[in-house]
Length: 342
Image 1: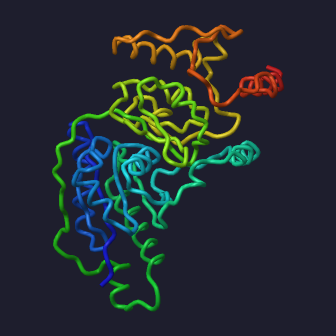
Image 2: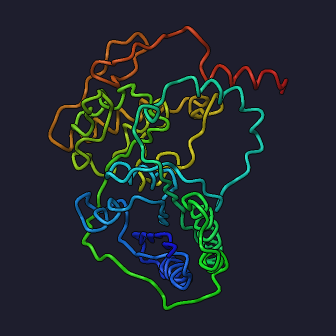
Image 3: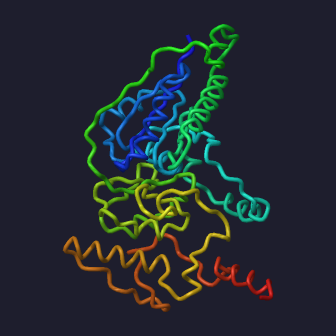
């Protein structure tokens, strides 16, 4: 018998009736399809690693799908942080065409020269597909994408010559059955912690140097990890702002860039506030960190004696910055504006 593909529907935090209707409509439609087995779970981000939901997820050794209200990148690395590992499954739903792909090619090649932590990890050879709920949205679109993934996943793990009748029933879904739907009811309190996108992380240790609350640590391979997630100060995203690779994600933050929106690469990623004299990301991060230190009854970090007068970002930076060697993103952007002869 061909096993159905597991689909986990993660309920969002919002109680807005329209969003709840999207969740329920998608769940009901999927439950009628014999190619999938649907399980509803509480908000993925808030679940404890030792709870029922993650225990069930950890038992799986095959492909599966998670549908949540979080960005796809955020959902994947939340699972990874909580011990559910797998390759990032290719999702077509909600994918956008990149009209500037050719122009970014040189920048992307330069990015790929850096060694990412993901290259050193032992990740199981199975795919995890993360779909993002959107509102408003047509429920059937989610079902179509789930069916596409289910059929693709089936063809990858079938070996030998399958029974043609069973294969036809799976691919064509001609035989309906009673809805196969279950739910995991688990008490999940609101949480706030970072997750690391290891496909972008270079293990530079800027985050562990910057954060003074003991959130980050290293494993026995000296690889960065979120060691004490609940030490994180609620609402504070400061470490994400100082990460040079946009590898630190706070899935519930209001800013898409911090919440896990697709990471930009290459020289076009720039904080435009630098052009207009507003505080840059590092200054904002330092201020956010100092506010949290004072709220915790601790003294803020004094300004460093740097020649540029910028606030202290890390206690003892592990990577020495090569100041003044090459042009940075701002220099390249200004050069590009000059070339336009405006």
